[in-house]
Image (cartoon, rainbow, N blue to C red):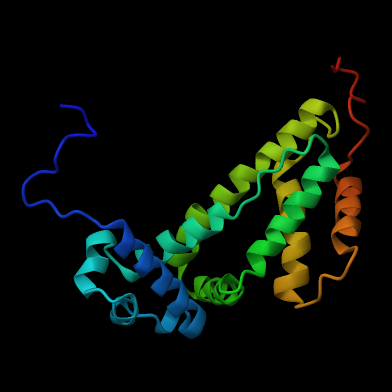
Length: 209
């Protein structure tokens, strides 16, 4: 019997996708309205219209539930641009970071989680592992492609480069609460290119098609 036709073992619980989606929405709403510290499994279950047991069948704890839901949203919002040029990719990436930070609910969730993580080492590590690292891993492709095109030096410090690209918008939006006025992204992209030591395509001397 193929895997697609195989029935689950007798007595095994089947997790309904619609319930999981309803719970995820409830988690985000509770985080946005009340914060991580005041979020409870009871409140999430009530808002989602499910029993508390439905939550524990999916996640063993409040922290695991929150991390799973937040990471799914955050990683899904990562832009993987491939415009054919470093400037085009950087512009797209900056816009994507801004979209993430200004998301209607996430703009209220992220500052609270960061504050909580400063007091909770386990939460801090979970956020880094499940949100920060996957987002950064996706963004590395932008730098790799630019290096192959000869637009970035091969000895580029990629960790610092990722800090720069993410930090420009994060500091502006989340730390300062400043407006992203017209022309901001273009100015930020041009400054980032200068800081990264960007150069005309193919100027590393390698043969390019």
